[in-house]
Length: 335
Image (cartoon, rainbow, N blue to C red; front, side):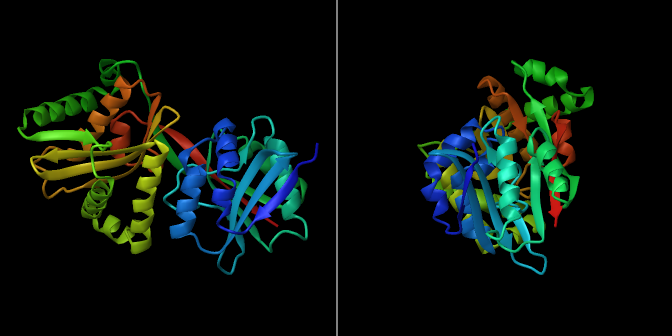
């Protein structure tokens, strides 16, 4: 049966389709927090620019696919997935399992029609390696005579977690294992040191501000990154993730001073490491970021989590914790 396609240009689409969107995403192959209507709404509200153009694909009364696109401003008219900047790690078209080809064909047919907005480039960034889009979309684009380029966008170092902390330590390189154990012994001997995950007993707004403060103290680059719109985005995202049940905001604290923090998402039994903060001036030589990461990995193993995903970026510390690269790709289609 041919799919019906309905374009939405009003930001209310994230609320209008929220229930059906959520059901579809949970069934899809690409279920990540970055494609939830809550995340997409938050990103668009604070960081979006251009013209929103979300395509919903229906089979009778069933939502079968979503292409959450926007036409970005600039000389080159580029259609991108909502979230397509540095703060989103896994993005894709959303489709029911087994209906990915139907969804992609219908979207490309629409983009070829007179009803589509004027565009020069379709830019799908950070598409996961396991996505059916990587196989289907290039073939369909080339069949229409369009140019299509698939390239490595970045890597996400991922640790597949074993059943026990000792098994995890045994999986590390001998030097890294020795260094991690040394840091943990020193941390455990430091009086007044504790770590915690923000819960209902904490004031979320205060903890969010403390996280942003630590994030800005990490480096000049992060301080510059935290523009007023970006700060507003993080504040709302923390609340949205908390309301959705997938927030993990954690701190390492020495006496009254917060040394390091992680903003993670716990989603589909995986821990996703979204961003971090570190007051390196206050760190008493612990390696506070490393110590908190170790505590969080040990906690994830104790909770039976499947993986600890460091998300995009090839920083050395991710590999010292046993991360193995999982690629994400960019698909560029030019008419």
